Length: 167
Image (tube, rainbow, N blue to C red; front, side, top):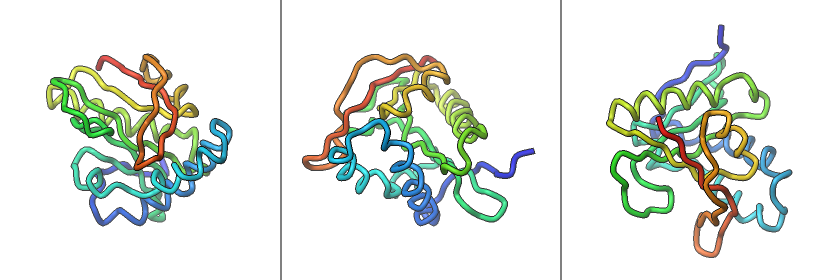
């Protein structure tokens, strides 16, 4: 039995998701990136995205005591704001609290994303993965396409990997 429940996020989850991202991303990403490159990226990446929280396709895992221990979702829109592609969804802002890692939370959230996307006619997912998350997505069946620079904000780029998966 899980000690957490997964549900659709709402805008009222902004503080809990931000706290999760602040606990998760610096810890998980420090071994994959130079600190000078990572520091400005983390300032942007560790804030919950209100648009995602209101999308209806972003999920959170909540512990029995109310702590947000995982998050992730999908959208039709690419994270970089470029045009929507027919029948392709985009995996967005996954994270797991370090104290809750390796308990299947990310995989459980991904399964909900995939089922939801399939019901909307999506046949493939694309993901802008950080280097440290590439193996997580590979284990879900994603294929690494190429190295990319993800624009997180003005003058803030983070190297990553473009990944895709047929669903």
